[in-house]
Image (tube, rainbow, N blue to C red; front, side, top):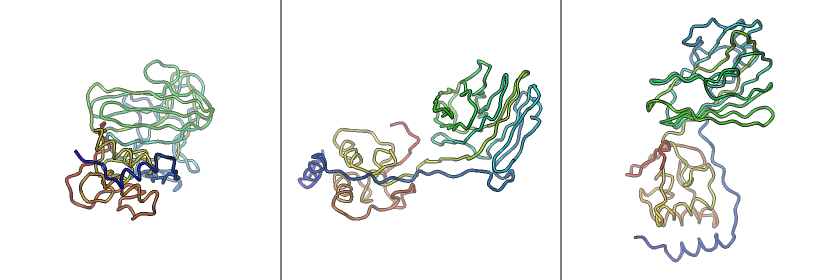
Length: 292
């Protein structure tokens, strides 16, 4: 078993005694998928569909100003869905804004997961066939997180109300397709618009120094390295702990990071502050989709 060096003990004791530093914020690996600023429906990014039940499209749908507009003014069973031309995988997330301008009766801003194994309808108001959406007028923010075994659907409403649901699948899947859009039932009308779609794809991209994967580099990270070395704390990404990029995990990594944070030490090798891949050949692994 490795022994903590005297220098490492000294630095750790200084920090634990109360030395502080503003954390370095790491940039998340986010991609603006579409904000409709082109004022056109990009067929390279989207398909337009009804759902598998085959109801007709709504009376109004398409790009209006810089958002995707949907509306059904007369009560009827109607659907309209935009489907990203992206195959979603475990570890990814997709988020967007939904603006409920008016609604009456049965309606929904629905996400339908149409993967290899399961079909799930979510966010319908007036039906008890899935997780319920926030039934408020105004702009809500929806986030969809994918895991190997379930989907997490979260929504922050205009009044600050927050809901989060886990949707489990009957069989384990690796790839998923989303239908995102509007629904009205036989007695329903709705005017719902969509905008600001953001895709996050972490996969094996990592930030060197962000040992605890909280998108910040601060004192908690060298402590996490030490806990991994001496207390068997698990890690999803060994590369993020290899601070000096020598292909090994040892006490020098914690010391290197402490020196950088508190003694203006050497710059941390890339990828640093924004996600990237390790270009140095070694035997260390990184899979941020794993649950350690």
